[in-house]
Length: 195
Image (cartoon, rainbow, N blue to C red):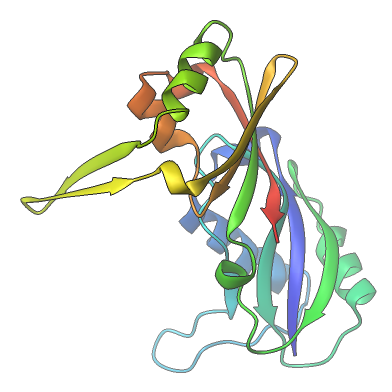
């Protein structure tokens, strides 16, 4: 029995890394008495699957997570059990049934972000992402690779003091760094994934 859970991660929980989030989920599922299925082998792991990592310091809303259960439960029962263990800055908002072939990374490629605090940098940022190409160059083990990030920028618009971005399989952090804008001075929120 495979379920897709949707959760919000905000306030102090935005400083929890991707790996720590997996550990938090494992503990929360066990403490809530959810009959989670585990992998086989010497180090059994809970069958939990998250989408693309949420950048450290980014609040995330309507974020999906897949789990596999040993026993059947209704979606409402599961939601009630998980939310019974109150965790500051974290809540489950919805549960749906999915088939075994469904995967978050395949189902949700585009992600919506809201960036506040750009101020005078907003024009600089818009000018930067309006270029025909945005090349990110990385060095790993002595090998240099380059990729064009422009095709991953699906949509962008300014709403008041905020910039709304829809990106494919990436966070805005790489683009902001390339543009020379300090991420620490911004408030970035991820509003779920766009199907």
